[in-house]
Length: 162
Image 1 (cartoon, helix red, strand yellow):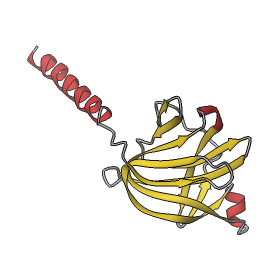
Image 2 (cartoon, helix red, strand yellow):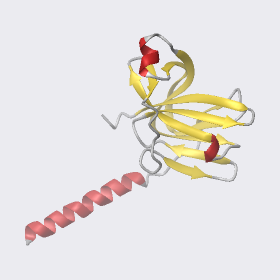
Image 3 (tube, helix red, strand yellow):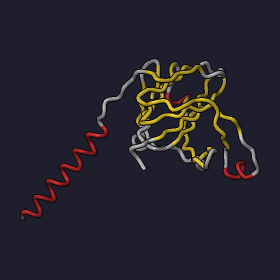
Image 4 (cartoon, one colour):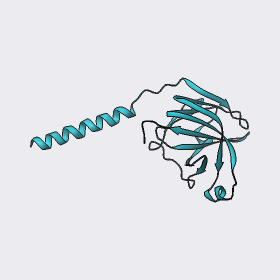
């Protein structure tokens, strides 16, 4: 009987610890920001330490990577669980896909769509949409408006996730 109570207590403690990690307070102070060139949308990153920004080598598919069909894509690298916020758009105007890191090259991961509440948390406000990337994955964000389309890579590093 004591073993059963110990197992129940251990399960409850583990659940509380896991849920406590999900409830971490998000620091909404922007640590990086830019205006996307084609859409004019303002993009911010918060809740992370910026490791760098600039271009990253990108290929749409593995086949493109094998034939040297690369693009120099704008990217921001962040340590932690970044929150990416876009102002003046809705969630319908923003899409994201996983990126596979192949050395110094990023490739769309079979165009598999990340799942809300599993791979990221979505917050929609009247003037913005935010994505909390609480994973160790890399993402390609595409913003599409009447003015055009912009792509931006967000590379997440997590020293607490191996």
